[in-house]
Structure formats: structure tokens, C-alpha cells
Length: 111
DNA sequence: AGAGTGACGGTTG
DNA sequence: TCAACCGCCACTC
Image 1 (tube, rainbow, N blue to C red):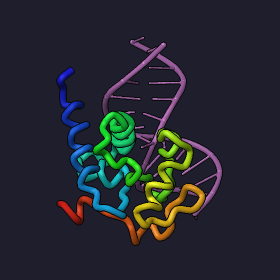
Image 2: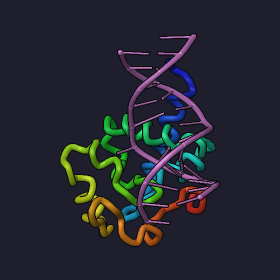
Image 3: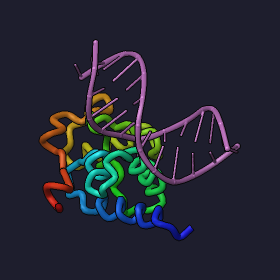
Image 4: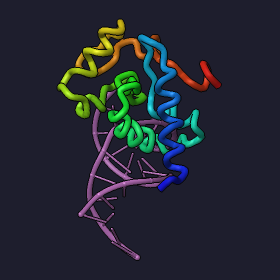
């Protein structure tokens, strides 16, 4: 194990932790920032393991359509939506409204 | 070794 | 935006 994949996990976590309050980003954006734009799935996969780390605001990470595809992985059924709404993000039917308004791109913000 | 799976994304129609 | 298809990479059986 101690391979690069572990490093990959840490990179994803590092970016996820930097997501500001009330902001959201997409798996592809993180993947691209990490230099693995073709592996957006790997970001989701890494996020799946992130549930072990409470410090990872995975609820702020959605797919490019702003759809809460990962809400199924949370404890409740609409926990993810509740968390986002709690941060001021309008979510209807598992979909973020005005996504571009809340969207946070690590490439532009961090770079 | 081969096949199936997945918190995705881009392209095409 | 939606539907369908493909590519991508790591994991599991």
C-alpha cells in the first residue's frame, strides 16, 4: 500500500477542506486541479472514503450538473441537502439552484 | 486474467 | 437540458 494512491486521497481531502462555507464544487474541478481531469470518478471514489474523515465537507462536492448524486451515501436521505441549505445554498429536488453562483473552482481560487 | 462497478465528464444527436 | 455512448482509473469478485 503506501503508494501514490494514498497521496491522491490526501490531495482530494486537502482541496475539499479548502472549500469555503456556503460554496460548492464539482468532482471534475477537483480532478482537474489535481491533474487527473480524466479521472473524475477517482475523486468520487476518494470522497467515498472521506466519510471516514469528519473534516471533509463532502456535501459541498457535487457533480457538474449541481445534482446531489452522493446524497445516497450520507447517513440520512436528505442530510446532504439539509447541510447545504444550512449554509445558504438553495437545493431543490436534490439539485442546487443557481449553481454557478455558489460554484467554487479551486483552479481559479487556489491555482 | 477477465468482467463488473462507480459520489463523473465530454461529445454527439 | 436530456438521452445515449465512450473513456478513464482504481477496486472487488
